Every structure is written in C-alpha cells, then in structure tokens.
Image (cartoon, rainbow, N blue to C red; front, side, top):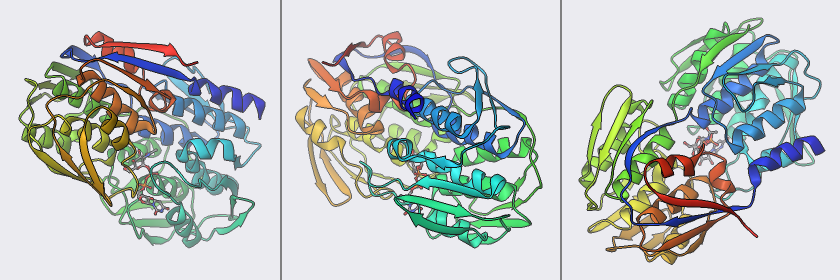
Length: 432
Ligand code: UD1
C-alpha cells in the first residue's frame, strides 16, 4: 500500500499558480488525449490476459491514480510517462479497489465490471461524498444485479460476486457515463446478449466500445441510448488511440474568448464540441473549424448567454464552470442552470472574490457581467472549478494566485506550458 500511496502522491503536489492577467492569448495549441477516454481504456486491459497498447494517454494525476490502482491489482504497465503505454493483466492477484484511491477518483469504480466479468468477484470502496455532489453508484450496482451478480455492502466496500454474468436487458433510471462503461465492459464477457437502454451517449463511451470491439467484443449502438453487447468467452489484445480531450479543447476555446485573443486548437474533434461552439458563437466570438482544428477569435467583448447543462450532445457539465468565468465579464446577464450534478457551483465563491457578480439559487446561477475582474488569491476546489479560476485569472487585471492546483493537475496535461506557449503570464511555484 505504501508504494501505491507514494505513486498516487506524485499527482498531489501542493503547488500554486501565479497568473498576471490581461494578455490576449494568441497562437496554436495541441490538445492531449481525453482523460475520460483514457481511464476506461486503461481499465479495459483487465478484460484480457493479452497486452493492450494505448496511444495518446495524457500524463495526468488521474492517469497516475489509475495506474496505481491497476498495478495494485497486478496489471503490469510499461511505458508510463511516454507514448504509447502497454498494459497486461496476466497476473491479477487482487480484486479490490481501496478507499484511498476511490475517494480521490471516482472513476476507480470502473474496475468493478471488468473484475467481476473475468474473475467472478470484485470489492470496491464506496465513493462517499464528493465536492460536486453525492455521486452514488447505485445505477452501476442495480445493473450488475440484473446480470446475476450478488452485491453486498461490507465496511464501506461493495462486494460483488457472480460465477458468470448473464446477459440482460437493462434500462438505466438515469444516464450515467461510467455506469454505461462499467456495464458495457462487464457484458463483453457475459453469457448471452446484454441490451443497455438509456445508455450515456458521450464520445468517451463510443471510444471505449471501439477499443472493446478491437479486443474481440461485439458491441453495437455505442453513441446512441441503446447499446447491445453479445458476450464472448474471452477477449484478446489490441492497439488503440484515445480520442482528443473535448473538455480541454473547450477550455482553450474559452481562454481565447475571455482574453479577446486568437487561438487555434489543433488535433481536436470539433464535432464533439458543437454545443460549446454554438454558445460561444452566440456570445459574439468568431469560431472557425476544420476537421481537426478550431480557431477562436475574440475582441474582448462577449454577450451574456443562457446555459443549461445536459448529457451529450447537450452542453457538458464539465464546461459549465469555464463558461461561468466567461459570463462574469460578459455584457448583460446570463442564467446558468446545472442539471447533471446538484452541487457544482464551488467556483462561484472564488469568482466573487475576483469581483464577479453571481447569485446562486438552487441549481441556477444568475450571472451579471462586470466590466473587469480583479486578480485575487483563490483556491481550487475541484477539477473544472480550477480551470474556471485559471480562465478568470487570465482575463483579470492584476495578479491571481490559485492554490491547491493538484485539482487542475488531475485533468489538464502541461496546462501552464500550453498557456505560456500562447503568451500567458503564468508561473507555478511550490506552496508553503
Ligand atoms: C463522468 C465523467 C465526468 C462528468 C460526468 C457527467 C468520467 C471519468 N467522468 O462522471 O467528468 O462530469 O460523467 O458528464 O468519465 N448517478 C447516480 N447513480 C449512479 C451513477 C450516477 O445517481 O449510479 C448520477 C450522478 O450523481 C450525477 C449523474 O447521475 O448526478 C451523472 O453522473 P455520471 O454520468 O455517472 O458521472 P460520472 O460517470 O461519475
């Protein structure tokens, strides 16, 4: 466990970022592979004893955490810190995702489905409370029970057992991204056909299905609300490149808009960002697209627009905090409604410290644009809240100091190098 904690600790350095705002960002930037596609792709290695080779895995805190968890289970991981990485699950000797990992990264629950499907048992810590809401895993568990698993709770852990999972028709009560991924992975090794109804349609689900199909799975309909999976007796090795990170892409789009800059984002997939592009155009910024790049050109003036988060293809909850930073300096007012998570306005208090005018009523934020934000010491509280504070700092007058940057490092690869490349004044220092 010491080894696990140490490795995990690498992603949790107490750094802070110092940003001097006001410079319009200009230039080109390349997005990394998607964190939310990389995590399930790495976990999918548990489904076979053969090697899985993955390209474009970003170097992030969450990726280090999942490597720590997979190592703990017995998966060998080669090439970490470089591209590509290979994972091999031919010597699995533990079946448990411990509390230390699940509590810091909920996506650790993704090991439940694959462990149960291949080895007949899994023990995963319950995630517990989380900064952006309660985020239970009841939908994952109910679906696994429908496939014949016995699920029990013991000392804060979920224990699931099934000699062999059986295909079933499962209708998710609510759309869940990792729930869909967990069940899709479990069903690849089940006996018979599984149909998932009201499945999540996020591009990361589709990307995982593409990898699983390369491993010999028979999945149809991923990317739509109905996914059918014909179980196989075993899966084999495969090679796969994960999709570009649409949330990182969207964050750079907002960075261009909020600083009145001119940024071209390369190696992205613009059709994954239609909802963000539409909203940015509504604010008045120019957005130009090719098949694999997006250029955002602003003049420092944006109009307030209303935003309502939704599962894909709606406006992503993971982009809500960044858009709120933009709306805080917009002309006019905007209403931002969060429908996916019940408590995802942690960034509001920090934006208020920078001079924003925002009122929250339940799951709705009323943002009245102010002419400028002013730099202030602020604290990152979760991953996307941190991104929103970076964006606010880039636009603010004066210096913004963001502490607890480890939240940002969970999900953004080389963020300050990328921003420096676009002309931002940003520096990382160790926090004392
Ligand atoms: C994933 C993403 C996260 C994103 C979120 C919504 C990963 C690793 N993370 O998180 O970045 O913000 O999708 O797009 O891909 N719920 C239940 N019971 C369950 C499961 C979910 O009530 O068993 C609820 C959640 O509390 C939430 C909603 O369903 O209100 C959506 O959550 P879900 O899609 O499961 O989010 P994650 O998969 O955890």
